[in-house]
Amino acid sequence: MRKFKIFINMLYIKESQNREKLITENLTKDLNDRLYVVINTLGGVNFDDVNKFVENASLSDLEKLNNKLKKFPSTMGEVMKYLGAFEHLKNSEEYKEILKIILGGVEPLNENIEYDRYGFMSTDTNPYFLQYISPQQRKALFKIWDSRGKADFDDLKLVGVKFPGDGSIISREIANIVYPVLKLQWEGNDINNTNLAKKYTKNFNTINKDGTNLVFKLEIDSFDYGFDETRNFGDIGYACWNLIFYIKSDETYLTKNFLDWPESLTQHDIRKITWYDDNNNLFTTINEVFPDTINDDIKWSETAKFNVQHRLWWEIEKYACEYFCDFCNISIIIV
Image 1 (spheres, rainbow, N blue to C red):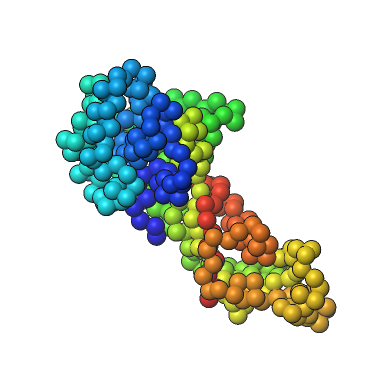
Image 2: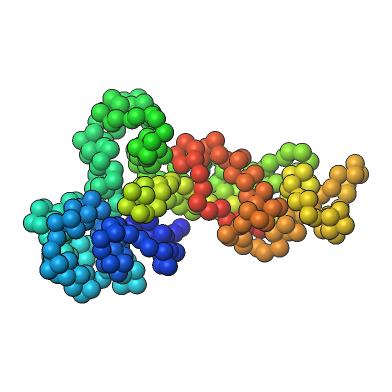
């Protein structure tokens, strides 16, 4: 299980150190980067607050903020040292001074941010969720679901959540993030209690199609999501699973059609790693496709591996999409 996924877009920050993470074009890159880190880890203000501050700030105000941030843990490396102790940073006098400068004396937003068991800001304190549904609306929604014994997307409108349904960012975030996260929370906030887990994680399962026999078991590693920040020069929104598939090597064999070998692979090449059955069908073993036991970061150019990965996803997609209808990463382990 991945731990310490406690801030939105952390992977974006970590993996994009050479890309600009602009909040506003009117600040230096160093100041932008520091603000981006503390806003996404500690909260209290949002990007709009920063833009309003910059529009009205004097050079003295900017210099004061810059000095405060340089003395405070506000780079990726500095913040990483405080994983598991963000409350200390959030409640520090130094951070309160930073918020005071940005907000101009206005009370900071969500100063008492809470985190759930998976390291995400709770829906009652996450400012991204609060723009769509308040704690009072959430409680009313859960009462409706309690009375009906199941979660239903259409019930959101009964508590006043406005869903445009027009394919806009707002529509996508409500449908792809807000609803599934609330549904999971209402069900006990346990990914191992989902229909997806009940169906595929308890025992080995078999895909038997077109002569292929693929025997697998699923492990739900985690899930991840992030709200859209393109207007602030950040990432697009996303919601997805991180999954691990265990494949039995001694019971799995794959056909040429199943793997969809690339045309560049000649018949001679295929013969070297395959055999024919009595009906002259072409087969290969899972170990030939995946020579390594642990396979992470599978690339689309690795045609056979990529196709096995996606066939596994298509097999579980119906149940996965009860929550998040995409995957961030699928690892394959040969056993």
